[in-house]
Image (cartoon, rainbow, N blue to C red):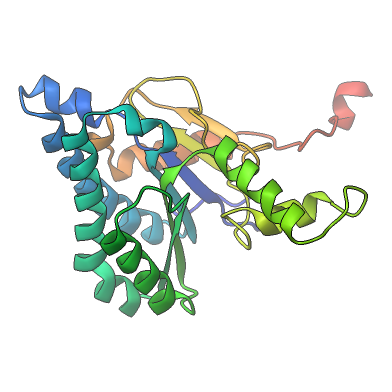
Amino acid sequence: MSAVHHNGHVPHIAIIMDGNGRWAKAQHRPRVFGHRAGVKAVRRTVEDARDLGITCLTLYSFSTENWTRPRAEIAALFDLLHRYIESDLEKLTAEGVRVRIIGSREGLTDDLIDVINRTETKTAHNTAFSLNIAFNYGGRDEILRAARKAIDSGLSSEELTADHMESFLDTAGIPGPDLVIRTSGEYRISNFLLWQAAYAEFVFTDVLWPDFSRADLEAALENYSGRERRFGNVNKADVA
């Protein structure tokens, strides 16, 4: 199976990776064990997405609301991102993957910010595949930061357009997602890509993130292929 096309367009897939903690609990293991398994699922999904012809993948890894979690768990999440980037950077670079970490840098450790900056710089000119990791990310926070950037740029309220706002978002230059997938059986978007997903299609699955497989990705794409994307327009057949 190859990626589903709508009018010749290869979809941008965004995934809310949920269920690591419940997966670990079911195995009577600590939550960190689930997060480690979640990183393995990230690696699998990146490979599967590329094999299926998808060229852009955005993964929701750590939200601005996750700061309420225990400090040990937060530290582990920081360490897992650091290790994933460091261990996979050469491979991702060689395969033409552009890596961007979207979200606020506030509260991140200096060494994590350093590896993020090095990764984004090293992969900036890659064009084969776009991997965006939302870390310390929140949609409302992103829009507020974009609004502040717009004000700082000197644009007047009359001059400010939707295109201007998009240029100030963390995702500037990245097309909005065509399909958003959420794992673990939850039916909410949890402050993820609020601006960008305005007309995205959504698929919710009961599969916990560490168990998410190529078959699950293919099933989501198959579901998406049957949708009619109207972008707010009325189908002429409905009013004929």
